[in-house]
Amino acid sequence: MNEALLILGMFAVTFSVRYVPLVVVGRAQLPPRVARALRYVPVAVLTAILVPAALMPTGELDISLSNAALIGSVAAALIAWKTRSLLLTIVLGMVIFLVWRGLVAPALI
Image (cartoon, rainbow, N blue to C red; front, top):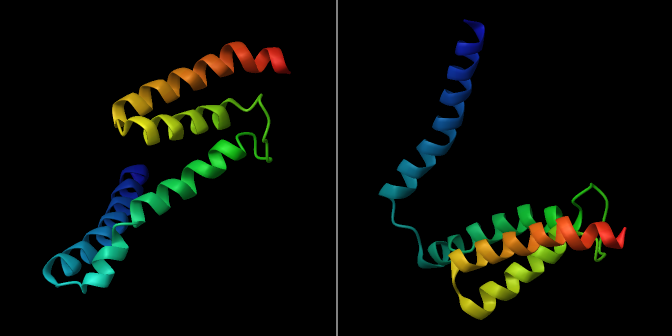
């Protein structure tokens, strides 16, 4: 019973913290400069998540050919830049990451 109350409480806090600003902002007209700046939020958040994961997969900086996460990330960035295809970027990036991790990285260690 305590776990259910805990989960319900966490839901209420998380939902209210995110929902209330959306309602307020949804009804207000944002200045064009603020609206333009908000377009960069997803890119900034994804960068903040992905760069440390690619450069420090074990918790320490690893810029070597044995770092499959870095190789897959660089490959995915190049594929995205060249093709502008989200699906192709995800699929080929994962394939390159998995192949590198399974075949190439163990040979380098």
